[in-house]
Image (cartoon, rainbow, N blue to C red; front, side, top):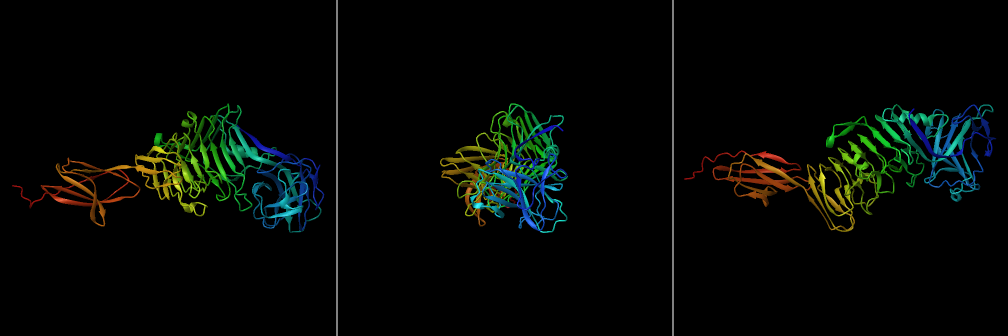
Length: 560
């Protein structure tokens, strides 16, 4: 075991003593035979009833906008979640409420026979049982009681206790340090630490082979002098859905890469290829089980993490509700330029700020965020003057992927500042708008190079104009020297305005045009005194191309 796992959690009660425990249904007992953490737990018996047991006299804990974790176990069939099969109890001394968090069909974060119920105090369930006082008067800033409860529809057998509660905590999640280049940290090691009886953190578990469930934040690296070397591949990380109400004001989960005075190396997947063609394989997938209401962010903007290397990583639904940027990478010179995003996919995520991180062969698709400029959809990528994003794709960033009503469209790239910028190998397809210009004033000019093909833009905050310069060349080859070439817009099969031409050509002629996202239908007319007139009906496309010309001799023409 090379990783060091430190809980970013505060113990409420470890259930190692019966002191200050109470229940209206039975007398709580100290149970030494069944426990999840330590060597004891608290138990009662329930029979054809709903009941609760909880620790009192906690001294007024401030549990606003945090997550509470309570380990519970039932040795008898319980009711459904809708009927309050499993409950987490909190109270302020006067108002005591049992919130419905699980049931027989939805046991939650289960490890063996135990389940770690998570209660987000920023998004409390709308279904609950009132034990005392009223739910509306509950003061989350001064919590005196914490515990659990069950609804048991069946009859108990004998006088044996059948429901159990063990350690309870509140806080964020886990901090992971340790590991070396020869023995890097792994997700399996984090899980082993979490599941250990001495810890029982209740943050990460294995759902099946190489598939892990998470119900808290994970921080890799620390603010102090600890060194961190974490490297893993071929796994799925699912942030589980424990949103018990319909709203979105929930405490966000975070994946964070941090560096202090020690060194931090964080690497997922394996690289394939080199340079601008580098992509990845053996990927890690990071998934949100409730994209609509479960906020997740990935933050790696610290100036002190030496290496952040993501190869082929697939982020699905990583979006921090209410904030425009859900994924932030290092903007710092030096270390940011040493980080890499290669072959990464951001699918239905919030906006990504890549900072100075070298980003190649990456896909930004189906952005799922409504916190762009008011009245407009958001953009998948935030552009800046330090950005290093090339050879990437922006796909299907569309309004239909958003939650907003009356929002006019979403975008591939947001430009918050006026100026002139160059796209290198950036391709766009089926976005509502390829570019968002969100500066309050000024103009934006984009030079599209090396196959870049932005075509549409939207001004969302008062800017003056957007100009896309995407010069593409179609080269006519094998011309007869001295040919006259004229290129016209094709207007319903007739020649419209002339867009290019030459009186007397050489053996080649370049047709240079600005590609604005859609093929341009044209008519090319080629004339030569000794050859038949040619009329070609073609579409000018998004990439440089060549077109060989064959001019047939005019056998009828006599030039004395």
